[in-house]
Amino acid sequence: MAKWGQGDPRWIVEEREDGTNVNNWHWCGRQGGAAGGGLLPGSGEGRPAGAGVCAGPQGRGGQGTRGPRSSSAAGRRARPPPQLGSVLGTERDATSWSKGKFQDLLVGIVVENDAGRGEISELKQVEGEASCSSRKGKLIFFYEWYIKLGWKGIVKESGVKHKGLIEIPNLSEENEVDDTEVNVSKKKGDGDILKDLMKTAGTAKVRQALGDYLKALKTEFTTGMILPTKAMATQELTVKRKPSENTLQVQASSPVALGVRIPTVALHMMELFDTSVEQLYSIFTVKDLVQKFSKSTAVLEAEKGGKFQMFDGNITGEYLELLTNKKIVMKWRCRNWPEEHYATVTLNFVPTLGQTELQLDCKGVPVCKEENMKFCWQKQHFEEIKGLLQLTPPNG
Image 1 (tube, rainbow, N blue to C red):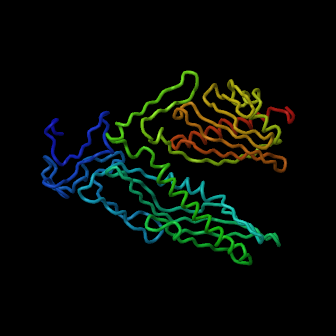
Image 2 (image 1 turned 30 degrees about the vertical axis):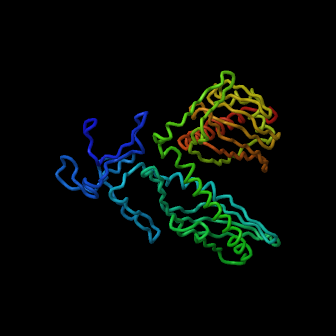
Image 3 (image 1 turned 45 degrees about the horizontal axis):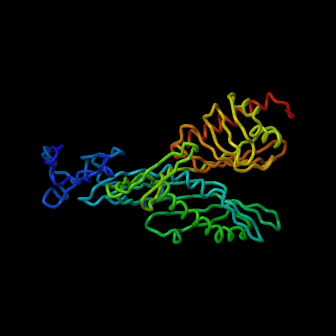
């Protein structure tokens, strides 16, 4: 590293008041230096600019290009290499996040007309990858997917049920979503009415969901990848906490985007309980029962706008909607989540034969807390409630 004031002209650095590394700046070949393939100081051997000097957070070392991706789907193309002489930045792998997003957006799509009803019931196969790179303050997206979905439907007049597949052979940045190929097939037999329904209305909804995925990839997933520059830092932005409220008051001298968007995911879980709807609903709204299954102190105001605290204050929130024995909607957060961030949790109580199905939908869960959220509901709610029900009389 050169001494201050004696830097090599090939280093590109932006002055920052807070001294933060700007978008993971790297060694770069420039005019008059080793543009496109200069010698590293003291290395004695040529190396393409940007290759291996700073590996970045992904630890890619001297990886200037990517080979073809490993996938069973034919025709996978190699990721284009970065241009020589460019400043390489942060790369974030969106593959795992994308698979969860496809599950949330595609499974459950329903189409219906006078002749029948069809629903996408299963995400059977997902192959491919997605990533986002930050280079010179710009975001570059790469994604290529093969997706196979299962659908089922029923013909209204006859009541006959049918099943089939939907295949999306190539969702990539090379094609517009509206031009993405969507193939619909059906198992042998009658039911072409349903196949036609899925090919028309179903295909339209699938493409709409794929468009929603791309919007989320380019906004929700990329939060924090572009660090503010000196020009942004000069905008006066102050954050004050009102002493009498648990909210933030933000003041800015110019119209800027306030706050930090947190990458989030949505969760959907279902569980069957051997009890009545009334009993299960009361377990979530009666303080004594909440304290029994949580084995901790709780504070509950089970009414619209009422606050709640569970597990000794580790979980807090507010009731947004309560439909007795049918539905509960809550603002919900865990103590270790980012400050002032809440998820929206919806509980639907569905009576079945001798049981109650609890449908849980969570929106706005921080990506980094997804597994913790699943564990919290499965282990600390569902399983503990089942244990309580074994000890509680039906009318208890």
